[in-house]
Structures are given as structure tokens and as C-alpha cells.
Length: 249
Image (cartoon, rainbow, N blue to C red; front, side, top):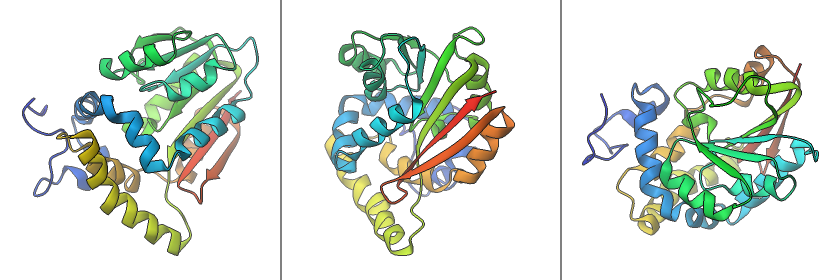
């Protein structure tokens, strides 16, 4: 059942939705409502709460994509266009796709030399074998069916095309993991909510969506099952996030 407009997308306890956010039946509608609510302060919170490392992570993703002048690039779940912008500085054939109008309005102003389309990662409005690079940054865990999304990325990629998935992860070092959890689950939700004046529960959802998402190994295996070869995963900043890459056969 969809959440009424007056209720938060991700209500606090005693609601149990955040215990397993990826299993919520109307996850897509809740994620859409959440991003629409936080769009105006999305970039500011990203910069402050990653200590500007989010820009470095996106730069690494572009490097791993090995952009060529003739490539057609599709940035899925592009949000406000941060990764789209980095690709657009390398190549003029870039399209950003997102299902939230409020995010796309910011992206269009930020990256005027890219094209933007409203669309769903599970049903991309593109023909088969029409892209050389497909990217998704911090968005794969937000789709209703991440495995189906990978199938859709495979569909629109040409043979030899590259898939780049940049996503949050969890540090493996116990001490770093403890510090990260304290910051990510205790401090960040308070400060980010204060800055954005958010009432959707977005910054409570964020850490729980990371903690309950699949492992790096599961992502690699799913990419191989979808027909990608040379699958690699590069941990960044002590494993806080990981950039996955695969080449379509």
C-alpha cells in the first residue's frame, strides 16, 4: 500500500519498514517520495557528509569506464547529475535518466550539455544495444529489483560495453567499521535531517539500506550471470564504497 502524502516515506519506530527496506512492497513509491523531498539539499548533504569524497568516488568511476570519444553514455538514477557532469566533461554523448522530476530539474541546470529523460531503471526508454557505457552511482540499492535492473543494463549495452556500478559498502576492518557505523547510523541522520529539514525519513533509510543490501560478492556474481566478463570491484576509502565494473560479452 502506498504511503499517504502526509506520512513520511520511511517512518520511525515502531514501524518496522527500516528493518528490511529492500523487502518493502511499495519501495519504489517510497524512494520516489524521499528523493523528491530531499532534492534541494541533496548535493550539500552529499558534500558535507562525505567530506567531499563523493566527488573523488565519481571520478574513479569515470576512470574505470575508460571513456572513448565515440561512446554513448547512459547514467541511470542520475539524481542531480554529479556523475553525469563528470562524464560530460569527457564526452558529449551523455544521457542521464532518473524517475524523480525534482532531481532532474537540478541536473538539467548543472549539466546543460547532456540530455536528461525521466525513466525507470527497470524499464529504460532506450533500444537494445544502444549504449557503450551504462553507469549507476549510489542508486542500484534504491531500485525495487536490483537484479532486474542489471538485466536491463545488459539489454541496452552493446557487446564490449562497460557497466559501472558505484555503491556504498561496509568497511571490513573492525575498528573502521565501528567508527563508520557510529557516524553513519548515529550522527549523519541527525545532521543531514537538520540541514535538509527532511520529514521523509530519508537519512534514516540511507544507512539501513546500505547495511541490509547485498555483498560485493553477490553483486559480482549477478553481473557474471547477466553476461559480463572481467568483473572487478575496487574498494574506495577503506571500503566505504565500491566501484564495480563489467564488460558485456
